[in-house]
Length: 340
Ligand SMILES: *Cc1c(COP(=O)(O)O)cnc(C)c1O
Image 1 (cartoon, helix red, strand yellow):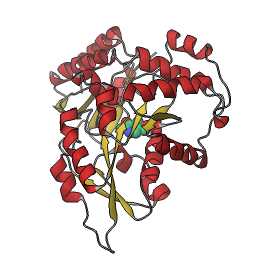
Image 2 (image 1 turned 180 degrees about the vertical axis):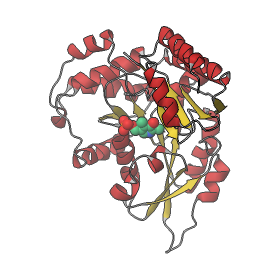
Image 3 (image 1 turned 45 degrees about the vertical axis):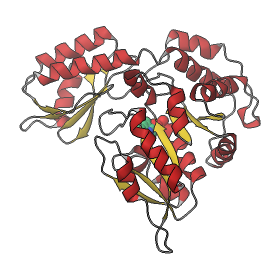
Image 4 (image 1 turned 60 degrees about the vertical axis):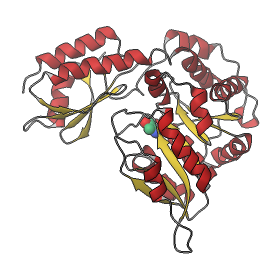
């Protein structure tokens, strides 16, 4: 088996997770009759202190439905310029919600309240109506950097004052919480809606959660059906998600230590030009001289390590549940041995 640093989405269910999946009680979730799904949604809503939660097939659908539920056509979404909702969701904000977008260059993916305040449009017939702010935590394209809750509170206050909604793309929120020690409840309190991926660092095979008020989630549930995301006996998948929430959040610190370990070895190699600061489970680095990401990655693959290009000369490693301490040691040995 190659050591797979391509993404934290490549994990296979652990024996404990598989056992939980096999033991799931299921029903037809389109009729709202799947006890496994209810167990997951109720657990998550309570964990974040929100009224309700909805199991989603993917993080993209969760974000897109949240955006649609918060906005009307000709409204505007404000986000950081490297945001997933802006860069990697096929312009879904325009396609599904018919809204405008205002991006802001942040500090490693993070915005502050003054920047958001400056981006909010005044009221005029010819301007889109600024309606929703989307923050991302951790910031994926910015290399897994994270906000602390103190950095978010002034943005929340601004949104309250100006009548904007605040959504969190928390695909990797638990990676941030593993570093800050903050709680899901503290984060739940600051957002109108949150989207959490179960299939990233938490290690479930599929699924995301959307959290919000009962009214918001009822709207999201109708939209999910309209998006073709109504699912039947998904208690099996919900059981994996519930297992992940209960058993795989604490261990994320190991992934972060592994990322730092890989970065420390990379820092000593002549073929590495620069390494972005490592915050959580993502390592992004630029190659020196003439070395291309393509060439580097094919040499790495020959040695049994897979990773992905993040630009013509930029490479990304992501650590996760299926890369244990021994595999990281092995990957470090390969990195030390490579010559170009
Ligand atoms: C992966 C990711 C998503 C989307 O999740 P999918 O389940 O792949 O659709 C959304 N936002 C961020 C920040 C992500 O990293």
